[in-house]
Image (cartoon, rainbow, N blue to C red):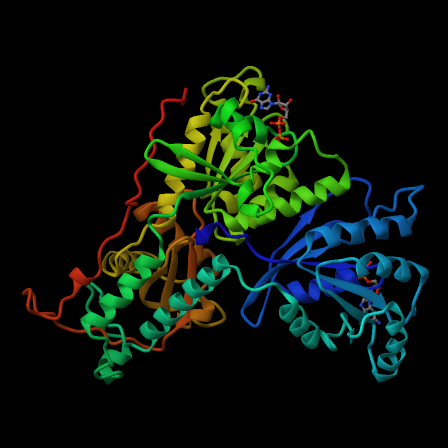
Length: 548
Ligand code: GDP
Ligand code: GDP
């Protein structure tokens, strides 16, 4: 099934210390979110970030977390790091330093990287000027036919490097293609809206008098899609939502929080064993599960179940972080398991941040609840309040306390995740949405930012999973963060979207012409019938009796 192909490709940056790996990482990731993996005993964190170039998305990993603990031989670490990169990456960027020239450590890393099946791109960094470009030629000694002289610090040559990376990536998976198509659909849809080609449908909202466009008659008669065209587009969007796909759920969390225990509690021992097929394709690591009337696909559970049999230590942890990120990109909903005794750690918050950034649904399972001493009926609420204050960006997430050991509420975790799946696919009709937006923006007007007060004309939901709304506004660039939060809250109060991030996009539109009068009869232009309310999921819900 298309939606269970692997997630984003992985591009790893390797090289000895100080060549400029993290500088390059930052340049590639830019302002996009990076996941920092804290690790004791290192002077630097490992970083995972998202990047996009020419429409291809990939995860970029700065493998630079070299242990510089006393006694460690740095060259050994470079080798270990290079080996890791060989095993996991789809493309390897081997960074060397033009100012320093070829070093023995470079030669050793090159030796290892030559054995890589993934393409290796040699980036000769600190080529800040033409003189350094010329010096870079000495790196042909490493044995690659092509060198990319760059200056990570100044951006010189990095465009060519990005082209080379994208060129070297494996062919797009069907999941990536589907995602890109969804994004393009949404984009096209909102452009049509912005151009006035789809008639804005605002119920009960007459254009207000200060709306110059109505006065001036701008967009006198917008080019409008015929009903049939709009309908076809709409049907295509709904079809793209793939109502028949199983609910893809990833169970994620730090080592030892109880992920395997939760999985086993959900599956029952026998099933866990039977389905442990060490396959050659990545899909073989997924575990299908019938839950009530829903089909659930637990993503990448082999990584969970094999725990205990694999080596531990930094290499294994790095591997598990990569697996986690991959699993998240392939899932609809992530169940983040945290340890009730330890609470929400920085690393938990980082992973949760990645879930949000990817627009996935999130259920936080506070496990080992049986170990929490002296519980009262207020303990859980206090715990939830504490988590929400630690990580305010997670306030949309469902939080449950469970015990994988005793089985307490484990079924509810899965039900909550299935519910979130449905929430992610909710579609609000344009009419309903604009009724809400009109009311919300008349109750609280947008604050003035740098002398400009944004004015929202109308909104439309352009995508599901995650629900994405485009607001057309004057001075859209001046919508204050607090106002965005206000609108998001209003949407949540009215329509739910529990457990899923929602996206609000503000687009500039200097004016909007709203139809002044609408014929009331069924033969009029009123088209509310074209916009089906899709609140709620058509997905059958599992109802299990395992909660307790
Ligand atoms: P890492 O240890 O490989 O991650 O290296 P860093 O990214 O921390 O960079 C090491 C040093 O090289 C820092 O002082 C950077 O400012 C410097 N550096 C990184 N890129 C460039 C570059 O393109 N040109 C120059 N001249 N210095 C750079
Ligand atoms: P994973 O590394 O996240 O897969 O964690 P495991 O499932 O292997 O669990 C780690 C340890 O925590 C094991 O010793 C489990 O028995 C224990 N554990 C897991 N869930 C619970 C729980 O709900 N309560 C208690 N008391 N211990 C648990």
